[in-house]
Length: 291
Ligand code: IPE
Ligand code: IPE
Ligand code: MG
Ligand code: MG
Ligand code: MG
Image (cartoon, rainbow, N blue to C red; front, side, top):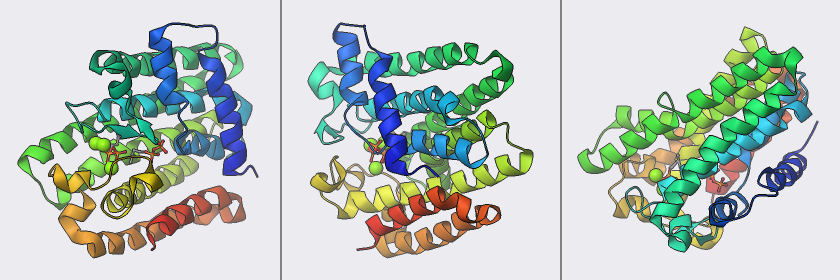
Protein backbone atom coordinates (compact mmCIF):
# COMPACT_ATOMS: atom_id res chain seq x y z
CA UNK A 1 0.00 0.00 0.00
CA UNK A 2 1.30 3.41 -0.95
CA UNK A 3 1.92 5.98 1.79
CA UNK A 4 0.92 9.65 1.71
CA UNK A 5 4.57 10.68 1.27
CA UNK A 6 4.91 8.37 -1.74
CA UNK A 7 1.74 9.72 -3.34
CA UNK A 8 2.94 13.29 -2.71
CA UNK A 9 6.28 12.55 -4.39
CA UNK A 10 4.50 11.42 -7.58
CA UNK A 11 2.03 14.33 -7.46
CA UNK A 12 4.76 16.95 -6.99
CA UNK A 13 6.77 15.48 -9.85
CA UNK A 14 3.78 15.51 -12.19
CA UNK A 15 2.62 19.01 -11.14
CA UNK A 16 6.04 20.34 -12.12
CA UNK A 17 5.61 19.09 -15.69
CA UNK A 18 2.14 20.52 -16.31
CA UNK A 19 3.16 23.99 -17.46
CA UNK A 20 6.55 22.87 -18.72
CA UNK A 21 7.54 24.83 -21.81
CA UNK A 22 5.05 27.65 -21.13
CA UNK A 23 6.47 31.03 -20.19
CA UNK A 24 5.09 34.38 -19.15
CA UNK A 25 3.58 36.13 -16.18
CA UNK A 26 0.36 34.14 -16.26
CA UNK A 27 2.08 30.77 -15.96
CA UNK A 28 4.47 32.22 -13.38
CA UNK A 29 1.58 33.35 -11.19
CA UNK A 30 -0.24 30.00 -11.51
CA UNK A 31 2.92 28.08 -10.61
CA UNK A 32 3.64 30.47 -7.73
CA UNK A 33 0.58 29.16 -5.91
CA UNK A 34 0.44 25.63 -7.33
CA UNK A 35 4.03 24.75 -6.46
CA UNK A 36 4.03 26.46 -3.06
CA UNK A 37 3.66 23.24 -1.09
CA UNK A 38 0.34 22.36 0.44
CA UNK A 39 -0.54 19.03 1.92
CA UNK A 40 -1.79 17.58 -1.39
CA UNK A 41 -4.53 15.79 0.47
CA UNK A 42 -7.19 15.79 -2.23
CA UNK A 43 -4.99 14.37 -5.02
CA UNK A 44 -3.44 11.79 -2.67
CA UNK A 45 -6.91 10.70 -1.55
CA UNK A 46 -7.99 10.34 -5.16
CA UNK A 47 -5.01 8.05 -5.78
CA UNK A 48 -5.60 6.15 -2.53
CA UNK A 49 -9.22 5.48 -3.52
CA UNK A 50 -8.13 4.20 -6.94
CA UNK A 51 -5.57 1.94 -5.26
CA UNK A 52 -7.97 0.69 -2.58
CA UNK A 53 -10.55 -0.27 -5.20
CA UNK A 54 -8.10 -2.04 -7.51
CA UNK A 55 -7.53 0.60 -10.21
CA UNK A 56 -4.37 1.82 -11.88
CA UNK A 57 -2.90 4.82 -10.02
CA UNK A 58 -0.75 5.82 -13.00
CA UNK A 59 -3.89 6.36 -15.02
CA UNK A 60 -5.29 8.45 -12.15
CA UNK A 61 -2.27 10.75 -11.69
CA UNK A 62 -3.47 13.46 -14.10
CA UNK A 63 -6.97 13.65 -12.58
CA UNK A 64 -5.27 13.80 -9.17
CA UNK A 65 -3.13 16.75 -10.28
CA UNK A 66 -6.20 18.36 -11.84
CA UNK A 67 -8.09 18.35 -8.55
CA UNK A 68 -5.09 19.94 -6.85
CA UNK A 69 -5.10 22.66 -9.55
CA UNK A 70 -8.80 23.28 -8.89
CA UNK A 71 -8.18 23.34 -5.14
CA UNK A 72 -5.32 25.82 -5.61
CA UNK A 73 -7.54 28.06 -7.73
CA UNK A 74 -10.15 27.98 -4.95
CA UNK A 75 -7.50 29.12 -2.45
CA UNK A 76 -6.31 31.98 -4.69
CA UNK A 77 -9.87 33.24 -5.08
CA UNK A 78 -10.73 32.60 -1.40
CA UNK A 79 -7.89 34.96 -0.40
CA UNK A 80 -8.96 37.83 -2.70
CA UNK A 81 -9.97 41.15 -1.09
CA UNK A 82 -13.58 40.56 -2.17
CA UNK A 83 -13.66 37.23 -0.35
CA UNK A 84 -11.54 36.57 2.78
CA UNK A 85 -8.96 39.28 2.08
CA UNK A 86 -6.14 37.10 3.33
CA UNK A 87 -2.54 38.14 2.68
CA UNK A 88 -0.88 34.83 3.64
CA UNK A 89 -1.23 31.40 1.99
CA UNK A 90 0.94 28.31 2.17
CA UNK A 91 3.46 30.30 4.19
CA UNK A 92 3.92 32.94 1.48
CA UNK A 93 2.24 36.20 0.44
CA UNK A 94 -1.08 35.37 -1.25
CA UNK A 95 -1.22 35.38 -5.03
CA UNK A 96 -2.96 38.78 -5.29
CA UNK A 97 -0.41 40.37 -2.94
CA UNK A 98 2.37 39.43 -5.35
CA UNK A 99 0.65 39.70 -8.74
CA UNK A 100 -2.29 42.02 -8.11
CA UNK A 101 -5.99 41.24 -7.95
CA UNK A 102 -6.57 41.07 -11.70
CA UNK A 103 -3.75 38.62 -12.36
CA UNK A 104 -4.77 36.55 -9.33
CA UNK A 105 -8.31 36.19 -10.67
CA UNK A 106 -6.83 35.05 -13.98
CA UNK A 107 -4.39 32.66 -12.27
CA UNK A 108 -7.38 30.97 -10.63
CA UNK A 109 -9.34 30.91 -13.88
CA UNK A 110 -6.31 29.52 -15.71
CA UNK A 111 -5.75 26.71 -13.19
CA UNK A 112 -9.42 25.75 -13.26
CA UNK A 113 -9.67 25.70 -17.04
CA UNK A 114 -6.39 23.91 -17.59
CA UNK A 115 -7.36 21.22 -15.10
CA UNK A 116 -10.19 20.16 -17.41
CA UNK A 117 -7.96 20.36 -20.49
CA UNK A 118 -5.42 17.94 -19.04
CA UNK A 119 -8.11 15.55 -17.82
CA UNK A 120 -9.64 15.44 -21.29
CA UNK A 121 -6.24 14.89 -22.89
CA UNK A 122 -5.44 12.16 -20.37
CA UNK A 123 -8.76 10.43 -21.09
CA UNK A 124 -7.84 10.28 -24.78
CA UNK A 125 -4.82 8.18 -23.80
CA UNK A 126 -7.11 5.48 -22.38
CA UNK A 127 -9.81 4.89 -25.03
CA UNK A 128 -10.68 1.52 -23.49
CA UNK A 129 -11.55 3.32 -20.21
CA UNK A 130 -13.24 6.39 -21.71
CA UNK A 131 -16.39 6.01 -19.61
CA UNK A 132 -14.38 5.78 -16.38
CA UNK A 133 -12.57 9.00 -17.23
CA UNK A 134 -15.73 10.85 -18.22
CA UNK A 135 -17.29 9.78 -14.90
CA UNK A 136 -14.20 10.93 -12.98
CA UNK A 137 -14.25 14.33 -14.70
CA UNK A 138 -17.94 14.62 -13.86
CA UNK A 139 -17.32 13.78 -10.17
CA UNK A 140 -14.57 16.40 -9.92
CA UNK A 141 -16.72 19.04 -11.64
CA UNK A 142 -19.60 18.23 -9.31
CA UNK A 143 -17.39 18.57 -6.22
CA UNK A 144 -15.98 21.90 -7.38
CA UNK A 145 -19.06 23.47 -8.90
CA UNK A 146 -22.51 24.71 -8.04
CA UNK A 147 -23.36 21.43 -6.28
CA UNK A 148 -20.20 21.72 -4.23
CA UNK A 149 -17.42 24.13 -3.46
CA UNK A 150 -18.84 27.17 -5.25
CA UNK A 151 -22.15 26.80 -3.47
CA UNK A 152 -20.42 26.49 -0.08
CA UNK A 153 -18.19 29.49 -0.73
CA UNK A 154 -21.19 31.57 -1.74
CA UNK A 155 -23.09 30.67 1.44
CA UNK A 156 -19.93 31.31 3.49
CA UNK A 157 -19.90 34.90 2.21
CA UNK A 158 -23.64 35.33 2.63
CA UNK A 159 -23.56 34.19 6.28
CA UNK A 160 -20.67 36.55 7.00
CA UNK A 161 -23.19 39.33 6.38
CA UNK A 162 -26.40 37.78 7.56
CA UNK A 163 -25.34 35.23 10.19
CA UNK A 164 -26.78 31.74 10.40
CA UNK A 165 -27.23 28.67 12.56
CA UNK A 166 -26.38 24.99 12.60
CA UNK A 167 -28.09 24.25 9.28
CA UNK A 168 -26.18 26.95 7.44
CA UNK A 169 -22.91 25.87 9.04
CA UNK A 170 -23.42 22.30 7.88
CA UNK A 171 -24.23 23.46 4.34
CA UNK A 172 -21.16 25.73 4.24
CA UNK A 173 -18.84 22.95 5.41
CA UNK A 174 -20.39 20.31 3.16
CA UNK A 175 -20.18 22.65 0.19
CA UNK A 176 -16.90 24.48 0.46
CA UNK A 177 -14.84 21.62 1.85
CA UNK A 178 -16.43 18.15 1.96
CA UNK A 179 -17.57 18.35 -1.68
CA UNK A 180 -13.99 18.59 -2.96
CA UNK A 181 -13.12 15.46 -0.97
CA UNK A 182 -16.25 13.81 -2.38
CA UNK A 183 -15.04 14.71 -5.87
CA UNK A 184 -11.58 13.28 -5.15
CA UNK A 185 -12.79 10.03 -3.63
CA UNK A 186 -15.55 9.39 -6.13
CA UNK A 187 -13.27 10.22 -9.06
CA UNK A 188 -10.69 7.79 -7.68
CA UNK A 189 -13.40 5.17 -7.33
CA UNK A 190 -14.73 5.80 -10.86
CA UNK A 191 -11.23 5.32 -12.29
CA UNK A 192 -11.21 1.90 -10.61
CA UNK A 193 -14.63 1.17 -12.12
CA UNK A 194 -15.98 0.79 -8.59
CA UNK A 195 -19.25 -0.92 -7.71
CA UNK A 196 -22.12 1.13 -6.23
CA UNK A 197 -21.37 -0.09 -2.69
CA UNK A 198 -17.81 1.20 -2.91
CA UNK A 199 -18.95 4.53 -4.35
CA UNK A 200 -21.35 4.84 -1.45
CA UNK A 201 -18.66 4.06 1.14
CA UNK A 202 -16.26 6.59 -0.42
CA UNK A 203 -19.01 9.22 -0.45
CA UNK A 204 -19.79 8.60 3.21
CA UNK A 205 -16.14 8.79 4.18
CA UNK A 206 -15.67 12.00 2.16
CA UNK A 207 -18.67 13.63 3.82
CA UNK A 208 -17.48 12.91 7.35
CA UNK A 209 -13.78 13.45 6.68
CA UNK A 210 -14.58 16.71 4.88
CA UNK A 211 -16.72 18.02 7.72
CA UNK A 212 -14.05 16.99 10.23
CA UNK A 213 -11.37 18.67 8.13
CA UNK A 214 -13.26 21.98 8.07
CA UNK A 215 -14.02 21.74 11.80
CA UNK A 216 -10.28 21.31 12.34
CA UNK A 217 -9.54 24.25 10.02
CA UNK A 218 -11.96 26.43 12.01
CA UNK A 219 -10.40 25.28 15.32
CA UNK A 220 -6.88 25.97 14.04
CA UNK A 221 -7.89 29.45 12.87
CA UNK A 222 -8.69 30.18 16.52
CA UNK A 223 -5.81 28.28 18.19
CA UNK A 224 -2.78 27.89 15.90
CA UNK A 225 -0.12 30.34 14.76
CA UNK A 226 0.58 31.41 11.15
CA UNK A 227 3.91 29.56 11.45
CA UNK A 228 2.00 26.34 12.06
CA UNK A 229 -0.69 26.73 9.40
CA UNK A 230 1.01 28.93 6.78
CA UNK A 231 -2.00 31.27 6.82
CA UNK A 232 -3.41 34.06 8.97
CA UNK A 233 -4.89 33.27 12.39
CA UNK A 234 -7.92 34.64 14.18
CA UNK A 235 -9.46 35.89 10.96
CA UNK A 236 -12.74 34.02 11.16
CA UNK A 237 -13.87 35.73 14.37
CA UNK A 238 -12.54 39.10 13.22
CA UNK A 239 -14.49 38.89 9.95
CA UNK A 240 -17.67 37.61 11.58
CA UNK A 241 -17.54 34.28 9.75
CA UNK A 242 -20.00 31.54 10.62
CA UNK A 243 -17.65 28.72 11.67
CA UNK A 244 -17.72 25.71 13.97
CA UNK A 245 -15.92 27.78 16.61
CA UNK A 246 -17.97 30.97 16.31
CA UNK A 247 -21.19 28.92 16.49
CA UNK A 248 -20.33 26.18 19.02
CA UNK A 249 -17.27 27.48 20.86
CA UNK A 250 -13.95 25.62 20.94
CA UNK A 251 -15.15 22.85 23.21
CA UNK A 252 -18.40 22.36 21.30
CA UNK A 253 -16.47 22.17 18.03
CA UNK A 254 -13.97 19.68 19.47
CA UNK A 255 -16.80 17.51 20.74
CA UNK A 256 -18.40 17.25 17.32
CA UNK A 257 -15.06 16.30 15.72
CA UNK A 258 -15.06 13.12 17.81
CA UNK A 259 -18.44 12.07 16.38
CA UNK A 260 -17.35 12.90 12.82
CA UNK A 261 -14.18 10.86 13.35
CA UNK A 262 -16.24 7.85 14.39
CA UNK A 263 -18.66 8.24 11.48
CA UNK A 264 -15.78 8.47 9.00
CA UNK A 265 -14.19 5.34 10.49
CA UNK A 266 -17.50 3.50 10.22
CA UNK A 267 -17.60 4.18 6.47
CA UNK A 268 -14.34 2.22 6.15
CA UNK A 269 -15.56 -0.82 8.07
CA UNK A 270 -15.82 -3.05 5.00
CA UNK A 271 -12.18 -2.56 3.95
CA UNK A 272 -10.20 -3.83 6.95
CA UNK A 273 -6.47 -3.14 6.85
CA UNK A 274 -6.60 -2.06 3.22
CA UNK A 275 -8.09 1.28 4.29
CA UNK A 276 -5.04 2.22 6.37
CA UNK A 277 -4.39 5.35 4.27
CA UNK A 278 -7.83 6.71 5.10
CA UNK A 279 -7.63 5.85 8.82
CA UNK A 280 -4.28 7.55 9.11
CA UNK A 281 -5.62 10.67 7.38
CA UNK A 282 -8.29 10.87 10.09
CA UNK A 283 -5.76 10.36 12.87
CA UNK A 284 -3.53 13.09 11.43
CA UNK A 285 -6.36 15.63 11.51
CA UNK A 286 -7.32 14.67 15.06
CA UNK A 287 -3.70 14.94 16.23
CA UNK A 288 -3.50 18.54 14.97
CA UNK A 289 -6.42 19.73 17.07
CA UNK A 290 -5.73 17.57 20.11
CA UNK A 291 -3.50 19.90 22.07
C1 IPE B 1 -7.41 24.73 2.88
O1 IPE B 1 -7.18 23.41 2.49
C2 IPE B 1 -8.82 25.09 2.55
C3 IPE B 1 -9.79 24.34 3.35
C4 IPE B 1 -10.73 23.63 2.83
C5 IPE B 1 -9.74 24.45 4.79
P1 IPE B 1 -5.84 22.66 2.92
O2 IPE B 1 -5.68 22.75 4.41
O3 IPE B 1 -5.86 21.28 2.35
O4 IPE B 1 -4.71 23.55 2.25
P2 IPE B 1 -3.33 23.14 1.56
O5 IPE B 1 -3.68 22.56 0.24
O6 IPE B 1 -2.63 22.15 2.45
O7 IPE B 1 -2.59 24.44 1.43
C1 IPE C 1 -12.23 27.96 2.28
O1 IPE C 1 -12.43 27.87 3.66
C2 IPE C 1 -12.33 26.68 1.60
C3 IPE C 1 -12.10 26.86 0.15
C4 IPE C 1 -12.95 26.44 -0.73
C5 IPE C 1 -10.91 27.53 -0.33
P1 IPE C 1 -11.55 28.88 4.51
O2 IPE C 1 -11.72 30.27 4.04
O3 IPE C 1 -11.77 28.60 5.95
O4 IPE C 1 -10.10 28.35 4.11
P2 IPE C 1 -8.75 29.02 4.63
O5 IPE C 1 -8.80 28.97 6.14
O6 IPE C 1 -8.70 30.39 4.09
O7 IPE C 1 -7.71 28.10 4.09
MG1 MG D 1 -13.13 31.35 2.96
MG1 MG E 1 -10.15 31.77 3.76
MG1 MG F 1 -10.27 28.59 7.44
